Amino acid sequence: MHELSIAQSLIDAACEAAADEGPVRVTRLAVRIGLMSGVVPEALQFSFGLAAEGTACEGAVLEVEEVRVQVFCSQCDAPRALSDGFVLICPACGAPTPQIVAGRELELVSLEVTDNAAADT
Image (cartoon, rainbow, N blue to C red):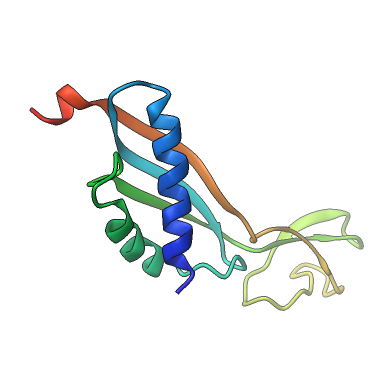
């Protein structure tokens, strides 16, 4: 389950950023995960809770935004969101569209932190 190592990497990045702010606790992490990234959001959520124990991220909410697969169609000269699975064919004109422009993301988008003193009350 590679989601555990991904969760650990997210926590490491969040804790490092939080440390720059002083004695704070991370309360929320927002991530974007593309449908072609190979990451299972439910497994990442589960792993995140385990990996966060004893860190500045313990008790934080992991907010996941799933990103649909989007391709660039050279026939239409436009990006197109795929509706069914990962068949790389333009849904508008039917042309083959091998250029993927979205859907493989795995990004830490934002963090919310709170002062440790405020978190403990």
